[in-house]
Length: 320
Image 1 (spheres, rainbow, N blue to C red):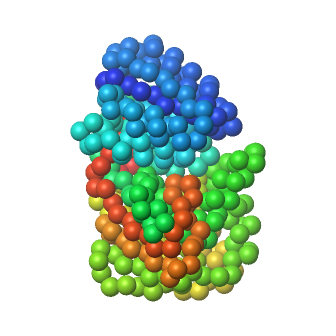
Image 2 (cartoon, rainbow, N blue to C red):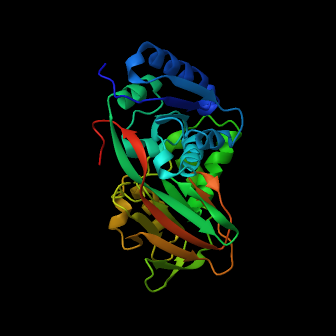
């Protein structure tokens, strides 16, 4: 193996990820890095034991050259926020070993999914790239949070949070299958739209009756649904997808099916916009909201792109 020099490396692993397979995945990483001493200048492996620990660990990683996160989108979200709390010149490069249900950020990077040995090999033979990171604040959360892949409101967010609840309850469904069944459960009940105004890059306000509203740094969420199919994480922009008209159930189900492949953007009922800064105001009524799968509260949101803020390890065959 011709290894990329990772320097001093910290591995943050969630042993509970992917129904407990994270523990064995962490052992794979330990074994491989121990076998290929030339790949690092020494490494430490830290295992998380509770939610929030990955963020705390990453925030303490300023002495490392590389931080590798092993886990699902939730662990990655925490590690990204921990790294972004460090000054730019102290921020290690991020490597991801995806082991979860959705793995959408890993899809954006072009990594092998739920195969720790294969994705680690991709990191060790890959390259470093700078990517954008999204940041969102709200009237009730002024400190905000960063997101690597997705921020969504309304029905999109309700579906995402339903998948999180079902995983916690022990469902055996994963990835797109889990997203589809949660979507069908909620789509048939979808009645109310959310009244909101959107301003992009300081432009004029646009009024929406939003049923679907997603802000993407990469093209997919929900285990591979191509919501913003042309989004790339290094263009200095965020992609916004929303419905432009009221959608009745048959049309909504049809549009949902098209979104699996990114074909919904050909419909007049969906619109894609891009910008560096978005302000979304829900007229005092709090919508369902999720950030990389984590809930967020508020009625007025400001979303900004941190242009090229994070170094990541990507495979040589990176798709962008």
